Length: 633
Image (cartoon, rainbow, N blue to C red; front, side, top):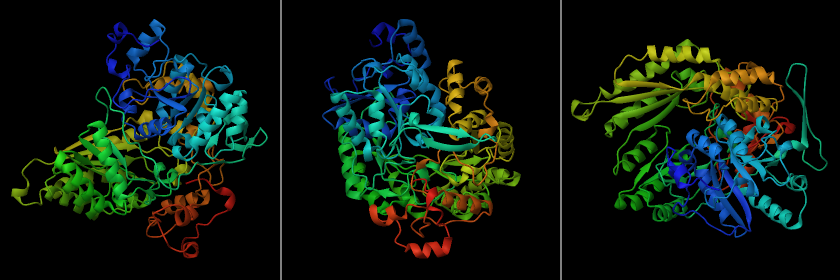
């Protein structure tokens, strides 16, 4: 049963719940049915490249039908509960409980309660152990799955790594299971040896007297002691069409994935480590994808997506080739925030010929010392000179992104955020009068730093909300010019995010308590209730500060240490120590740091990121650690 027309008239945006989009896939129902579940609104999910890619990746198979499932907005939740309408898949309108597998994408920790709401609305128990044999299997993947433990009680299996790498093997195994019969546990045991698959029920965790993890061991014969990430050496799949949203989404555009991974090594950036090593798509391939997708969607904008777009080895050539396709059709090209180097400034000037917008720059820290601590490899002069060049190129709006609460930060570093913003404005007034045709506008945004797994800062203590709020007041006080606007993220939300990000299995009870107290859409400021979360920690008997403000010892066992992503934990620890001394580390193209993935970089992927002999790296950096502490790419 779907929402009927009279029901849809009672909700804010009916287009979220009807399906039937251009390029939606409709198949027969006697296939393996997979529900791709995005635990946030339709507009957010339809803007997510991962959904578009995996939707068409699975639907390319004749034996699989992948459908979409989104979290209903609060008004629709009320209607569905009142009318007895279960959560359903958009393509078929069938209740999700009729599907074979439901796969949740974990993009942000503050969507975790939404997952439990969706399971409940689907007519299923939230805990794996309480669900029926006839219920769908529940899996989860995405960046937050690199620490799966907070959701271990709710998810049957996690998929960790590149979706295109071994997902077909999992689907093949399910097709055989469906044909031959057997229990869910039989199926989970069968797939538990596949790279990327983690079944929480097959492992036990014990804790020491101090509350930290003492041991993590399999409780089922034949499962691996460590879970190896699914890795794709070559990016060889991209959809030939995108779903076109029925209503305005966050991003209505063609998104091109230029590369996966990053060579920069910023110490705060989880994506920069979990997607290592850098893998690029070729120029001809990207241009062909752009042409195909523009024809299939009618979009008027292309976004070039990458953790650092300008680091693509043929970036200038790519931009020129794309412009040859887009300019005649008046299609604009947008670039993500990146470094203000010559390549970016040249590209941004060219791409704005169709539609001029603002430039986004992410210095991350206000002072040079802090940029060295986080290994940003970006100087004050480079930032200011780059902004000046942007002004000379006709841009008068610049967005600056910073983080507050970084490790080893002091009051002077926080004050430097406002000072740098002021200096960016001042550079505008060094231009000749005739080049200052429009008033300059600089937008400053500060995020609250949250330490994440598999980064050098996973050992760091997180600042409490009071510290973040004091820093936000300090930044605001240091901004004097009326040309500068200032926005900041909610400190209390970041505090709970930090607990979920580095939590262990005990956090599951907290998530469930928050959900049962009404928590949902916690990433939306109008729905986040801090007291509800603090009460949930009390109800579960869990100390929130144990997971947030507590610094970690160098030898502590982390909840995610059983996952093998390829990166040595000793490498991350060495980077943590270098951060304490504000020492820079080179990027991967300049010098291989021997993070643990050097064999993949030198032998498995193309193009090669670095060709420096490994023996030189060992003598220079001394980063080779104990082989038992491999973590991941």
